[in-house]
Length: 401
Image 1: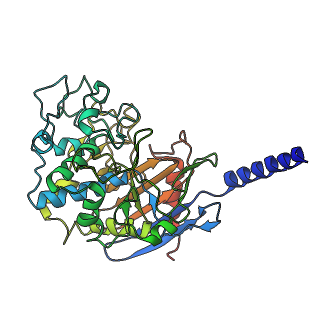
Image 2: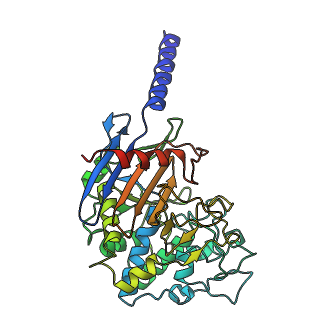
Image 3: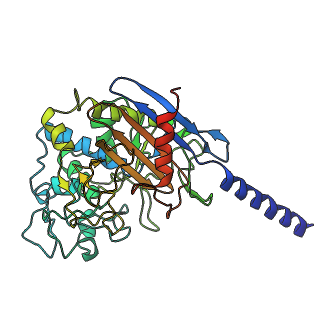
């Protein structure tokens, strides 16, 4: 009897796995201009176990678009004259931040935000658990590029830049990063969003969370069962999740400033509208120009990108702001296939691909995500995945609803 029950269990488990793999990926796209927005795609399930259809109001871990949102917080502090983009970050942090191979070259917020700091991730070394400090992590030689100096014009897309940025923000304000970003950016813009399920998200956001699955149906992230996670940060093995003694500035990695923002597409579209309005009422004209201007440009040989190759995905970059469609030799960044420049950022993590893109001339844009994308998913005619190109094409031809 037990053998029969066990066999039945295996059959049901296999069937459940097959259903999970066969379920269409959750995909949402919201088109917008400076004043209005419309959902143009919403298909698949936000939670396959509950068979909950995904909507544009469901928050998702939006991956590296988080970097752009973090930069908005930085620029707010620049406008308040609490931060200087070109000051040595060592002055803010209270300890020397130096590439050991180039000890005389200072590292600034401008270099960190534009991926020209000479930091590198060293696999997952940008994840710094509670109980460890940023200062400790920066002593690891694996996080430094010994061949390219800070500010030499060499671009190496690096998540670790943003824990340094977040630590600076914490140190000058005395506020934990998630709390600070809620106060500086998310609440003023009336967004129901948060970093790593920390400060800022409502109870409704936890109930509506998009569960991320890998392409084989495996659960990847955010299976919350409608509740906040028991611990919103990574902790050292065997340690307690106790944030009560955390000192702001010691470890800006905790709330994942490089990728941990949870936000719905209707709220991400609001951020797109802010870019379409050139930051009016939120950033000064000077701060907006700094954010969106060209901090780095591909010249054919100064880009190590994200995957270790100059793939043509990154060709022009501002301050945590990706500029696409610029053309040029070796560039394959024209996601929309219309040779129009757009500003925003892409996201890629845990099987999700996402984008926030705005045409600064027309003010029209698109906020989207799609899930269960294979790590080795094929690219299309551009350096973006074929899946993303399909989302963009479908969003462009879909009726507003």
